[in-house]
Image (cartoon, rainbow over all chains, first blue to last red; front, side, top):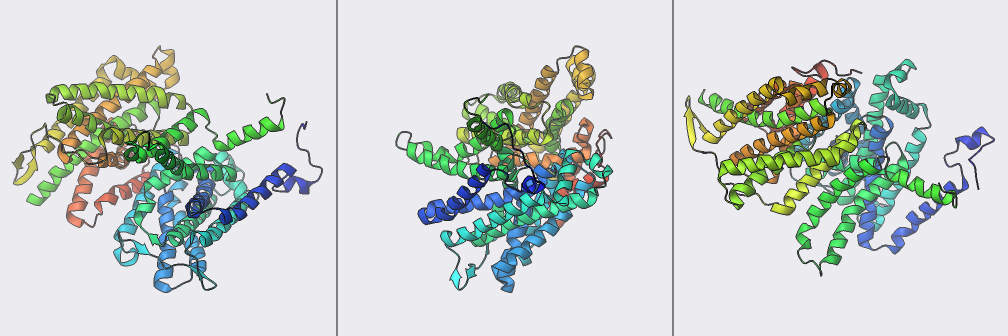
Length: 347
Length: 290
């Protein structure tokens, strides 16, 4: 029976994973991620890829909303910037995808910082409303700047290739996506051990106190928007190359809401929370579809209702989590861990 | 010139509907500090209920309208009791998200009952074209302006004269002080939500009459934001004037510039207003600046 975790050196105190159990869990997770594609069929690979992209996007949004406390409903717009930038670069200029994806990430970071300017004067719900405006403005530019983006028509992105091999199968692209997931998670976890990350958290907790302590609010809020948009752009760019077709419908305000739901259900201000939330919200509609198919023999009319059931459960899940477990899946996970750690005295 | 009058009349009617939608939004914000992202869905529910009353059950329209209003009160109270009350005292992002979840649930329920296909709505307000100063406009649009003016007048009176209206203003001003004066804040919240649902139902009925019944009605929910920010989030006259300005602005840009710019111009105005005068034209200047 343990009474706490005690370290005797600063080095041990500073490590990312402090206990053996944590290390074992990370290794198990890594093994699962690596061996998964060899056993999964196309359907599950496709789901895994969607989950991976969602995780990257959710971590990106969580940097802004969960860690820095700036509510954003502009996620869809920033993803569109990432997707269209990389798509246009590969299609029109023949830049290989492994260069165009980083370029599009930086470009999205720039756009994010520009649309983050209102955050210098606004906060809370006023900022949320301002980001809705940025979402609408970006989508309008995408659908009306015909010469560059092709307007409402789909933008067809060439298949990505690596070492002469076309990366268009779910199996091949799985590695790209999950490499990005790993890098994003690692970078983000480490970001919050640097002075940038600590400044973000200080701004979230008390912006006035943060500025008294010498944190330049203008600079760090824009930085938060830029860093967040960088990863959001990465998610958008991955969608572009994975689907090879970019359309504006993929980046509407519904997407912004979906990602916000992911991080709220998963847990604000944590990488593992983004992971839980993104996985949960991506798998929920798939599970419901399969459940509907299974019930089809008993209730024949269920087919037409599946989309509506999905929509209703999306909303219900948000409402129920906010009312009963506002700290999200991460908290539930911690409760489960604590239960077993303290068993049989788990009260 | 005729074209200008045409645009002006169309803009005014769009503005009147926007103002009605914004009115419910402002009421809720004023009474309970909640930003209601489900306002568009309240319109949607209202439009479908009046459709069911008149087209499906074949009721005489004043009767159908009355029943719709009663049902809307029920919807408002239920939503407040089940969803919003547990959210009292939670951070802004939770409150925003819960109304977003609510909008998703309401949309799904409407689609489950009535399907996702647009419906033919038997207009209960005459739609014959009327000529004004050389411009032609549907009579139902004039009705919309008229109904909006009557309702807004009624609400101004309600807030000035009636016991509940004054109590609501008191709660908006200071919940603690209102409580100590013996006002039930919970009841006032229920009042605010049911009135908001009623205004939304009436706006929904007008929209149904003018453009038909379909899922796109809920897009009014997003267009409410420029209106309330321009007018001031906590100001009822602001909602009206903001609605009319945004309605006119969108119609003029759509008519004279085109390019679909009308869909986005109100959001550009929104950002400018937020940067320059975040409390809007008539709002209280208490918003926190960073």
